[in-house]
Amino acid sequence: MPIRLLPGHLVNQIAAGEVVERPASVVKELVENSLDAGATSVSIDILAGGSKLIRVRDDGGGIPRDELALAVSRHATSKIASLDDLECIASLGFRGEALPSIASVSMLKLQSAQNGNAWQIDADNGVISEPKPAAHPRGTTVEVHDLFYNTPARRKFLRAERTEFDHIDKWVRRLALARPDVAFSMTHNRRVVLQLAAARDDAGRLARIGQLCGETFSNQAIAVTREDEGVALTGWLGLPTFNRSQPDLQFWFVNGRSISDRTLSHAVRHAYRDVLFHGRFPAYVLYLTLDPATVDANAHPAKHEVRFRDGRRVHGIVSQSVERALKDTRPGGHAAAAPAVLPGSTGSRQWSMPLSGHGTHSGSAVREALGGYATLAAAADARQQGDLQSADAPPLGFAIAQIGGIYILAENSNGLVVVDMHAAHERIVYEKLKAAFDQGEILRQPLLLPVAVSVSEREAELAANAAEIFSRVGLVIDRSGPTSLAVREFPALLKQTDAEALVRDILSDLQGEGVSNRIEDRCDEFLATMACHSSVRANRALNLQEMNALLREMETTERADQCNHGRPTWTAISIGDLDRLFLRGQ
Image (cartoon, rainbow, N blue to C red; front, top):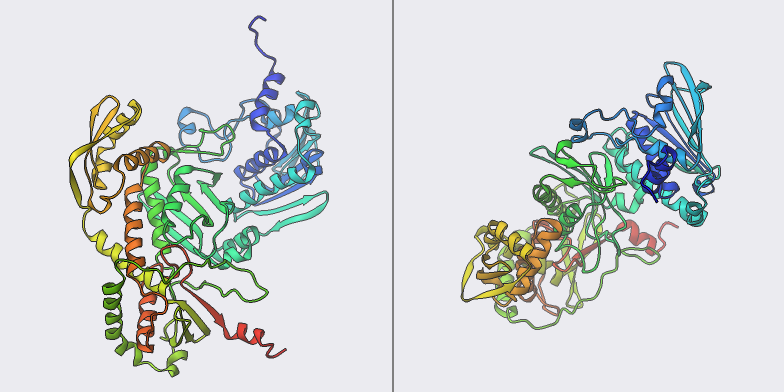
């Protein structure tokens, strides 16, 4: 078959294979166009999961009569005009492919009004009509009828109506999270399924997140705000006690664009590393704003991913910002405390963990800790129960008993507090060990015989370029050949670790995410083990003074809401909850 130029309509249908994957792709592109046009309100109407009708109406700037036909022409856009514009994209769309691709696989009607004059064009199978007058308020309406009617093979691969609408609903909710300042409404088969008012302040934005992600999340979320060297991070982080079995409540928005990115996901996962139970995932809605010139938004056909010019720097800023916000997850540190799991209610399950095991550090370390509590007890015991209603009453109140040799029962101004003394003391010891470790550099131990590591040529080149990173975490590595490395110095704290396996893991991290926290994580694991063996064990009898001193130290320890393994350290039951348990006032 000879080489020939393809007709324009066929080119558009081929492009539609990338742009128009399913009805949800059409909705995403049309709503993004509305947002780029400055809309303050967007309404979406869907019939039969989007296969029969998709209608998107906005109150944006509109399109003048002479540009309506251009709007459905390939590679025609108002958003960029030069390579400089492409390298610093601030809009959601920019390629000029969406409308012509959609029009090539559907019957499309475009109505728009500007300065009181409304016009309409129709596009069917590549044929565009002349503009004709229409009755339409300021803004634009795009109607897409019978999607894939002229490409039966594509239509055959559409899923059930419910499934296709679920994909539409997912994208609309993402876009509504990205732009809380815009009102959204959506109907499916003429039934209203989403109605969101525009949010004007932080309270309104949090209310929208509650509508889209659930009130449970918004009630257990902490705000994060940080700006550093032109990079701004804002949003909400779910408390570690509000965790998920899968990463289905994780939303990233970069310069207003909903994306998925391994670097950003890894940064948040690293910040949550020692406050989440194993196998659980954090929940968050985060917005990253930075210079568009430092982000490549043209890195994915459907614009679902971006590339950062300096991914390592962005990773560091995000990880540090989230860690800083999580430091305040302690009693009294955040209003959303760990909720009690009462009969008839749901909550995160506290998994069992053996507390009576024996460790090599338990004896002297625990005696030393209890000796310190005895010293602190004088000040703690000076307060009496009458102080509970005072303004400076401690968040965990005062101890009244020890239950089962494991739990401390305390009373505060709101009701009852139950503390897992082993988990709480484990966090306290762990944070002290980390603080002491962070004050000094990582000690390096020279190896008598260097450890040889066989790698690929690419990995050897990567190791040579990352020599400074390795040195900063206590590793001295030389390139001893085209495909071999020699480990000459190793972190003293990790002397029992397999050096070759660790180096391979770090190289894998650097290749995948561009950064590696492998050494810090291994050191933290070692310190966590020391803290576990050095903390108060089950069946250790504490007097009231020692229990009160432990409560006071919890209130000043970072991340004290969870132990090192991510288990909750305390829970609260309010007077109202107790009244309901005993049917008082009913």
